[in-house]
Length: 406
Image (cartoon, rainbow, N blue to C red; front, side, top):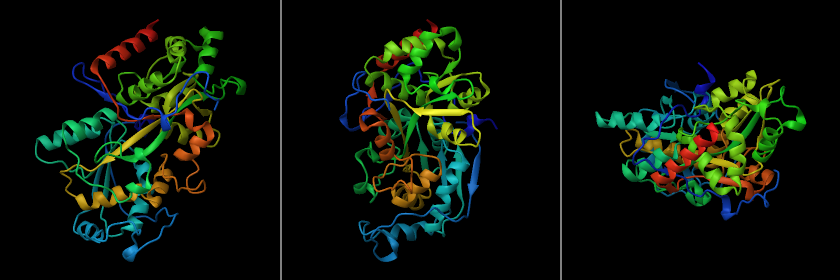
């Protein structure tokens, strides 16, 4: 299997009519991004089943009887008792088995009675498409869903009203963006990166931001012709990132008009990484950290990366429970666990970026807070769930594609 199956988000085309994209909270903490004010700073199907394993620990809190935190409701044991009568858990997600394994190990250490946990590695939009297809012909096996597609989540929540009504007891311990919409929760807050081939770009050439990349292109356009890559704007995951960044960084189009004619787009970060490693591309921008970082951290890797100095997008991966979940109680336990201190550590071990403020650097060296400290809180752009019109969508896509063809 190619690295396209590593996570992010294979081909998905936005329909021409009545399609909306939602991207809330575009700028972290209400900060304003301007050119003058900035400081430098996957794939397709298949299912897997995970069963046993020793788990990720770390973190502690005041507890009451039966091992729950003191802020949990007194009757929380009833959810545990109901889960004991269910048969495992079926998860639809855009995450690979190796991403899930540390999470499942830690979850089953806490709840050893849970049976087989099945995970499907789907495209971001396919998570929902499969659920709808199954539901229309009977009922879906999905009890828990995780995806990085803002458009599909807003339709799932608002249009289809398909999410179970459940308020996690962890919510008061979390930042506001942990629950961006009713019954929708944030799984992780993954940074979007610049990446490059360290063998082909000398250390003093490696871009720290989009302004650096544009300057390199202007200096030697022939060197970069068709040697840069990013997401195809028709990919819903990529569109969300590209649209929000262009809206929130002053002077974005001055840079994009220079960079985009050099670009060959891809549908996911897996092929981008492969082709940067091979030298087919010199660099890529707006790339998923969940694919870039595992490759860059390999011994002897030639793939390098940076946070984006001109505003680092933070992609909110969403999670929720369908109201038709056949394993409803177990799904609630999983949701609460993923939002808990120990669950967020497990998320980090799975290759994602947690966001609880009570995580230490030892527990999760790369967290939302740690990234904000490194690049500056004002330089984080949250990619969430704010609605834009179909006309705005079409105008952006047309402008983006027009710049690429210039």
